[in-house]
Amino acid sequence: MPQPPRSRLSAAHRAAMEANPWFASMSRVQRESLLGAAELIHLRRGAMVFRQGDPVNAAGGGFYGLAAGMIKISTLRQDGREAILAVLEPGNWFGEISLIDGSPRTHDATALSALDLLVVPHQAFAQLMQGAPFGRAVAALLAARVRGLYGLMEDATLRGLRARVARRLLALARGDATQSPVARISVALPQEALAMMLGVTRQTLSKELNALARERVIALGYGRIELLSLDRLQQLGSTG
Image (cartoon, rainbow, N blue to C red; front, side, top):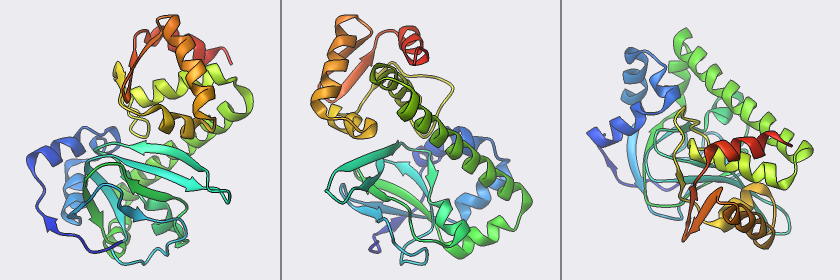
């Protein structure tokens, strides 16, 4: 990743980080230590934070906190098709896996908009990990990731498309990777991106969304899906 301009953390940035459940679960001392070890950089839309296969010690690499903007975590198949695994919103931290095991980056991380990004260098992250409280916090972050991956595997192997669509919309309503306890009633995501998340064609997804819209479960807008009945989506996601 190129070396972009740096600046100071603003009150708005700090508020976005504090709103994240994982970050908020740590003590104030831990939170300040993490923020104090980070540098704030700015990236343009379309910039790659890192690429699949990048070494852990690549220039500009580290443990990342998203202070503003949106990032997609994705991978490309050999035939060029893209699978979006997650969409990260402000407050999320990511990139810890390669720092822990020393292996290359597992996926691409791409800016969907202009970003304000906190970067904790590899050595600073390793120093923070020497403290048991921070180590336990990172373990909890990894546990949440594993639970999410198990959920995706279960959806892909055991659930029909209608249930998968409902469950992903509910996850996106809670911030996808954030999984806030409070669900929003609007998801700002193009249908093409949602199709990539589910591993289906845009046309196949469109049929499911239009059916849900006819049932007044959702309403479709430009680059946005309004969730009219969270309860009904919950029911559909539970039916398998």
